[in-house]
Image 1 (cartoon, each protein chain N blue to C red):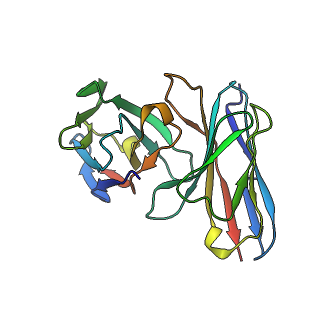
Image 2: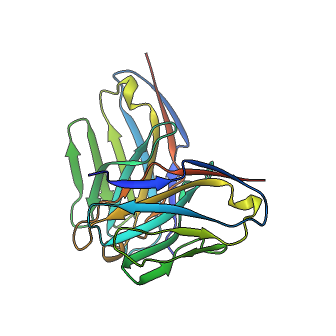
Image 3: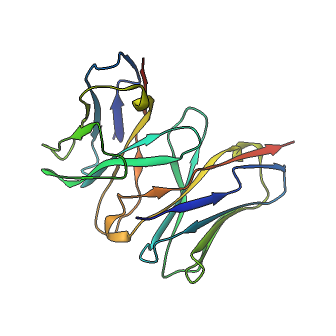
Length: 113
Length: 113
């Protein structure tokens, strides 16, 4: 199993551009989440999904959209990038039910100029 | 919503000494408390977790204690080694929504020779 994968590893955007961060898992996990990590602030939840077709907002959802059309994929869309969205983005997944352990992807480093 | 505070922000210990990192949480409904280790440039990785029906859990040199009354939980690392040097994050969530982790701001542990 590849586990949780993310692409790209690094991206530079100009203010106002849009892009999609990709996340995929091959563990048949029911739950998937997106976090952003900023210096001194830990990880903060952006959006999460409890299954295909079901998504909900986390702590910092503004400026981001998600969809979950398949169990495997959970892309994060930045509609109009802003410098405040410069961060490291981590996708995570967990099996569900009583299995609470979350597994993180390798991260995407995003720089918005 | 949940708020997790973590102390200290940095911790330096000599090899072989013990290290203790403390966290407090605000939501009494939280019942799942994982600890993650993150090495520089890498993804967070789960090292130990505890659920609210347990007061203490050990795994070799690592232990976590939970005081639900005081809403405190702590990570204890004994016989520290240089490879323990990393940033450690505590987190909390309500078990049924364990994808919605609220993280502390992290502790940078440095183990010196």
